[in-house]
Amino acid sequence: MKRTGRITMTLVMVLLLVLTAACAPAVTEEEEEEVAPTPTLPSGMGMLEIRVTDPGVVGVTSANVTAENIEIHPAGADDDGWILIIEGPITFDLVKLAETEGEEILGTSAITAGGFTGIRMDVIEVVGWTAEDPSREYQATVPSEKLKIVRPFKVEDGVKTILTIDFDLSKSLITRVIRGEENFLFKPVVKLKIEEEKLED
Image: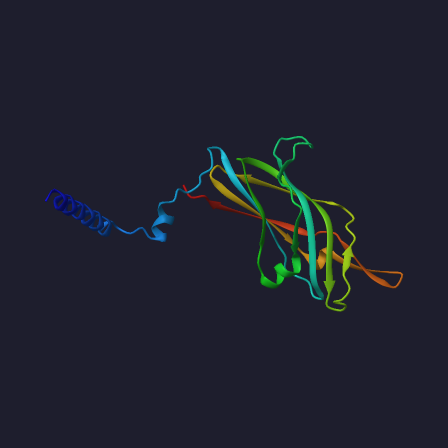
């Protein structure tokens, strides 16, 4: 009898556990995403995102630009006060961006909020192809390895500032004929677009 009683109690406890589990509300993936903590920046910090875009140029099927050492200059700092935010190297195709009418994010960095006077980067090489001779790869000459854009902008506390470097490839890629052979010169003509997005609390 004692053994029968123990078996009965065990069955009752198992039944209670099953019923408790059945009554517990299920947690969906959507609910897990809602309760997941949103990453926040420390006070006095903002987010800086660097993008590139291009309106395109007729006759060029690809223009791969490789850049590195993207830096910004704090207001009031001396000539050596540039801050490295993206090391790289990073390669992006300006023609592909034009075809999709899109933008490519080069990188995002959390930085101390404040005012800045400009942005610069090293342009390592420009390689591409043309529609006229798709089998021939061209390597454009880059007279100045440093692309510098002087335009003031601010990074606010708790705000994402988006800097979009808008290349004008039709003006940047210059065709030259040297000793009967077509060559290219890459002298970047750019605009800097500035946008802000409030980060979630």
